[in-house]
Length: 182
Image 1 (spheres, one colour):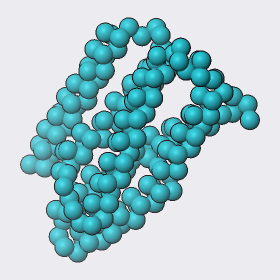
Image 2 (cartoon, rainbow, N blue to C red; image 1 turned 90 degrees about the vertical axis):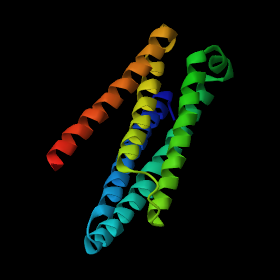
Image 3 (tube, rainbow, N blue to C red; image 1 turned 30 degrees about the horizontal axis):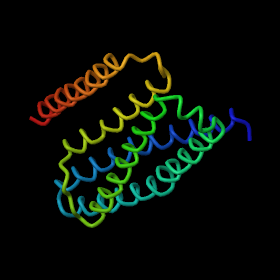
Image 4 (tube, helix red, strand yellow; image 1 turned 180 degrees about the horizontal axis):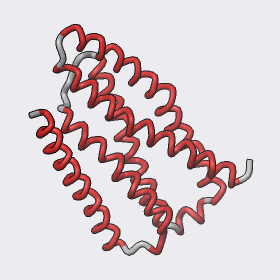
């Protein structure tokens, strides 16, 4: 298989993995908020959300994660050890991928807890959790595209600027939502 095909498949599965991670947490939010409904509606919604979460997780998100890693490491194999050692940005990227794997498995634990009826996270906490994947995506994309051009001070400031902007956006959304509820 050519390098271009391996890279294309890596990118396709990476996009699928992130899509799954973004959507699964939205489902967790809706599942959590459904607990405020009357008993009959809560039961129906919880059952439906469990089906949706399970299918998304086991049919799309986890297989996409595995294939992203397979094709990513295949590219590293094609590039070779010397290339890897010479490119510090790749070490950082793989660090973010490691954090993304932690995010993936924490999200899986949340799904298992919800299935057991354990609602440890509030919907606002889940909204913040959802933004962690956004920060990982922004970090990984900038590292790959900018590579050695990225000034680490500007990169760090940019990372925190994106994080702060996301937090402000969530606060604004929360205020708008609470005003609509009134």
